[in-house]
Image (cartoon, rainbow, N blue to C red; front, side, top):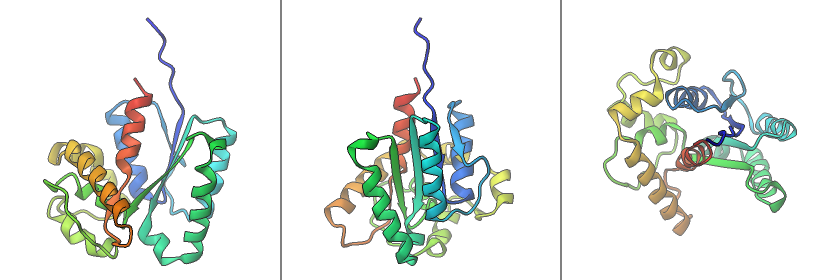
Length: 202
């Protein structure tokens, strides 16, 4: 029997939503990775990039950074920093260690994809626009610590929605967005993180 080598994976989110989702996924799937930072906080791009450097220094195998694009579109100076960093970490030097994962407008769109039977072009300007739609499937959903503590996000989404559907919808939308980037449609790359986790931890 070969010994399973556990990869160290840091998952860095901008706020509480990402932290609670990935922490509930980690527990449900018994994944031995770390959701960083240790407690959810609202982070700006500078803080996230500092964390990337600190996890690189700690020799983590993979560093996943989750970004809500609605925030970056609101702050052009942060968007510039983001694009520069994305380019830098995309070079051979980092050999795929750092993964930037985008969702437009926000992580809640990934949740919504669990409930939509087929891929649809949607456009949401903001979290506020998307929420009434999500609440049809997740009654009472709110972006609060109280809600996240009460609701196991990963469990709720996989038991009431369909993870396979979310994965395939998500892939198709990313493909369509690449083909017509000028149509700023809703999309999510979170499926890439789930694939990374499945591939690394056997």
